[in-house]
Amino acid sequence: MAAPAETGPVGGVALPDLAGDLAALRQAHRYRARRLLETPQRPRARIDGREVLSFCSNDYLGLAAHPQVVAAVTQGAARWGLGSGAAHLVTGHSGAHQALEEELADFVGQPRALLFSTGYMANLGVIAALAGRGETVWQDRLNHASLIDGALLARARLRRYAHADAADLARRLADGGARLIATDGVFSMDGDLAPLPTLAEVAAGSGAWLLVDDAHGLGVLGDEGRGSLAHWGLGAVPGLILMGTLGKAFGTFGAFVAGPHALIETLIQRARSYIYTTAPPPALAEATRVALAIARREDWRRERLGELIARLRAGAAELGLPLAPSQTPIQPLIAGSAERALDWSRRLEEAGILVTAIRPPTVPEGAARLRITLSAAHAPDDVDRLLEALADLPREAMP
Image (cartoon, rainbow, N blue to C red; front, side, top):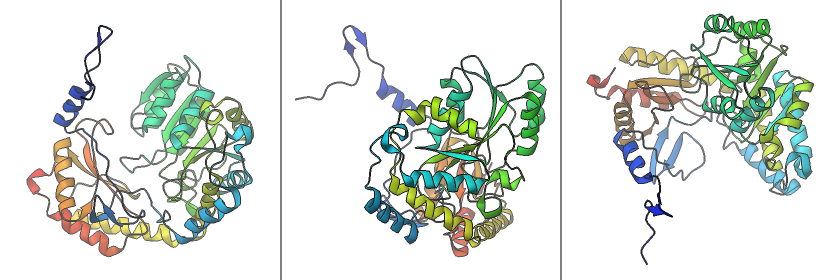
């Protein structure tokens, strides 16, 4: 029997031409395909049956496959079982979840923390809980998609200010107030930092909440890896909300929001992405507690990251490679066109090195790039090997 057609009339109405849309994505060099990882998350991995040296993971501290973290999952499953069984507000909130929330709050220096299943859900939950229909939310032009979507789904009035430009935000706010201002702490595709001290001043002056998505700063920046707020010397500032993820530098899964007691209680009552979803497995919470402890005490991981970043940037400068300005593990090599970024990625993969090509709409038109990410699990020789491969990229292809 023949398979049903993907397009065609149904009750007299033609279905959308999905196949045509997919073909158009391929033609524009924007088609995305998944790779099959066959090994744990480490720099040396086997992907799609091939051994590669990977520079495209967010496992910044090298904790995703750490033996103590893996053992904590096993022990946690033996103690709590695997699934949480329900939402946090039903019977899904375990002692493991509670302990992790308390330890995260202590880690970031905030009164309370609240676990979410993902960073995407956390941002949606915060924005929708605090900014209702028609209320104004100002966001950095290069914010993560979850922040943008949070404002759209809340039916708020979304406004954008120039990237990392607090002065531009202040000028725009002069024509009207804001309920909430949102920014990445470390921008996920560029690796640069938001000017949080001046943004906090602007937010305070306008009576707005300031939401900082520090997915790529926690574990990496500041004393003990406390993140962007610690990097800038900001503590429990009134009106400041911190969102952090656990699947990047901490190597596990999930997210949390930290802030004052009244904020957390409001999210428990109003954040739909918290209320109406199953709590993460408690065994993962136990693993994250161990990963957090390792991240806090092992400063050598951040020190090694700093050394690797400096090594890569120095080598790239000698080669005349146009790395974007970043002092974080995210090191973008701007290609310009999506076609060029794909070509560079393909050439590197042929040399046994995996670096993902990032294309629109993830980044602006004309800003496609290789997003090189470093981990404390990398060795200096790994960076040297990457530089050798980058040196072989055709020079006429450089922007």
